[in-house]
View 1 (cartoon, rainbow, N blue to C red):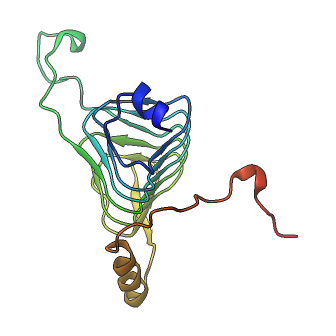
View 2 (view 1 turned 90 degrees about the vertical axis):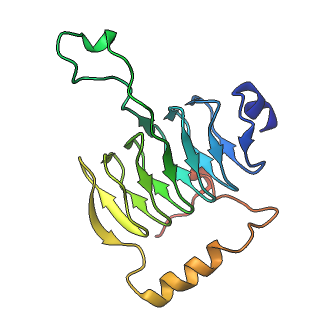
Length: 174
């Protein structure tokens, strides 16, 4: 994995960060412990991933890079607006094929359903889905479960850990 980090110029990612093949990732990416970027992802500059973040295949964090509101100037010739950082906090899962607009904050423990388009901030432990993404549920409706999970997330990450079982070794119910 250190070769992959060097090849992409990733100097601000934790040693346990994992980047799958076929990704286009800006070299200023910040990634916390055990964060995981699956194959085919596209990540623009100014993105920070917290600990235990999971980005599914073909997730894109893009946008806000062209001015569309300047009369008399083609979009291709317009200046770029001031960039906003994108923050995806600890223990967030962004599902397959989702698009996250740059400048969005997805707070701790949230889940973004596959194929969603996230155009606005997402609250802690919210489950969002759709185009545009809207809240459809809560990950931990019980406040005691949420408190317990919050306590775990403030602990130092383990020195070692195993990611989920690869799909080709997944067991199925009968």
